[in-house]
Amino acid sequence: MELLLGATVVALAIGFVVWPLFRPEPTADEREPETPGVSGIAGRREIYREVLELELDHRIGKLTDEDYRVLSEACLARATDLVAAEERQIEAADRRVEQEIAETRRALRGGAAGAGRATERVER
Image (cartoon, rainbow, N blue to C red):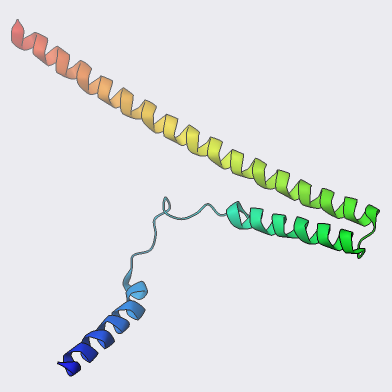
């Protein structure tokens, strides 16, 4: 009994380690968009952490008022760029979705129109 339990645990551990090697590659839809630098939630966290460190350094006196202003403005500019990039990605995704919806509607209307004509022929 103990031998069977031990063998099961070992088999599960090996399966857990080997499973990623046999998984299929993620499709383009499953991958996160690749943008240069840090983006998304990780980028927001990094910028927020930098701002907190700047505030702390300024309060303790490590940074002068001028240095704090310059560095915090740089962080704000990076945050603005990050938000703008995210908005562009969202807008592009929205356009793709709207395009797919329009194509589907055209295809359905084309199919429905063809079906309507066929029904008219049968009725006559």
